[in-house]
Image (tube, rainbow over all chains, first blue to last red):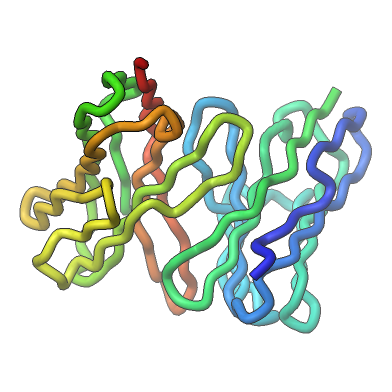
Length: 111
Length: 116
C-alpha cells in the first residue's frame, strides 16, 4: 500500500483565515481518525469516521472546526477563523480494525 | 476516564544495550488494546507493537517486547540491542471504544536517545 497521505505538509496562515487539510487513507481502510499534536505532547483525538459517518467528535473540536469524509474515501478538516492556538501538527490515521496507520501530518502555523 | 501515563520524559541508552520504557494506564474495561508507537524526529508515527488485553502472553516484535501486567495496569516496552535508528519519541496508547467509535488515548511520550 502507499500509506496514508496528507496534503499540504506545511501551512502558514494569518490569524482569521480559513484553512483546509486533506487526508487520503489506505484504500481498504474504513476507519479514519484526526488527531492534533502540539510540540512535545502526545497526539490528542479530534474526530473519528467509520466509512462516511462521523461517529465521535472531541470537545477539542470547537465550532470553528469541521471534518467530512464524503463517500467514505478521503477526508478534509477545515478550520475557520484560525487562531494562534490552532498552531499544531494535524495527524490523520486510518485502520481496518485496530492497527491504526498514521500519515506524515500537516504542520499548521498561525501568525 | 481513560488515561495513559508515561513517567519518563527522557531516557538514554548505550548502543547495543537494553532499555525499558514505562507506561501505566487507567481503565474500567476488561477487554482492550494497548500500543507503542515510535515517532522519529520530523517523521511520521509508526506502530511498534500491539497487545490485546485478553492475551496473557506478552507481545514480541523482533527486538521489541512488552511486559504487560494487567492487574497493575502496566505496559512497559523493552528494546533489546538498541540501535541508533531507535532514537525517537515513543508513545504508549490505549484504544477506547465508545458507542462504536474508536479512538486512541496517548501518553505524553518518552524521548529515547541512543548513545554511540
